[in-house]
Length: 328
Ligand code: F6P
Image (cartoon, rainbow, N blue to C red; front, top):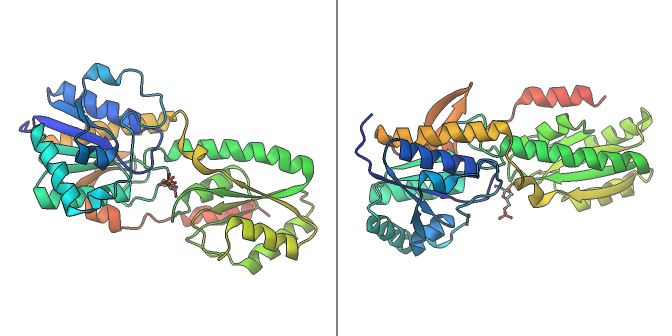
């Protein structure tokens, strides 16, 4: 391992995710281990542009491994999309003699990091932190496991009231354009139907399926709707449509929203984040640049950032079959 890197900056960007703090802690402590100076950039790329950069010691990340959100705060910077913004950001890195950057975030954050690396030659390594699990090159992103548990817990509670009132609930979950959260929580919480963008179920099939489940004796039901679903109606329109076409159902809608992004990270996310943070620093020390750290079959792997951004994180089709059979 070649330690030519003296100063590393780390930032969190895009939607926060539980476990980002554990990743930050890992980057900071790995730097301390190798006697590299570590700098925290606050508010993502926007903080880089505004020079909101502070040194982080090993002790500065005490007691954050168990905390949701991000101590560094996060932002979606419009200014960083401009060349002028990125020039300001580069000037600030130079001011602190920063040689390399660790970006903890999703595909938007990696796109920014990749452009920055190409323009200014600053080595960038990405750590996937998003609840959506929509990044190619890793089976799990940091925050995804925690979000699944948060959502399942919320749906279990909805089920209690659904059963008590013999109601049908449409529950909208996050995931941007991906259905990973919806598919997994749908199985985990025993939903009747799961609507995901990767698989257009169609309104007719949904109607048929709900009719069938009523006939089979079910008095309450839960349908999970991924926010990016492409059935052509939003969750409220969907509920209206079902009430009009199946008047025997009393329908309610629950949009879980940002509670899915908060809360104490699961043990899985803490361990994943700790491994990824360490691997990110050691990769930079090895001369790696323009890559993302991922996990595949339990092992840490590297994927070029452009592949991580452009590649598709495919849903597991076996899960669709499991769901179909479980909801008979
Ligand atoms: O990418 C994480 C995520 O929570 C998505 O699931 C969701 O579509 C989006 O961010 C919401 O973003 P914002 O916090 O800007 O409303």
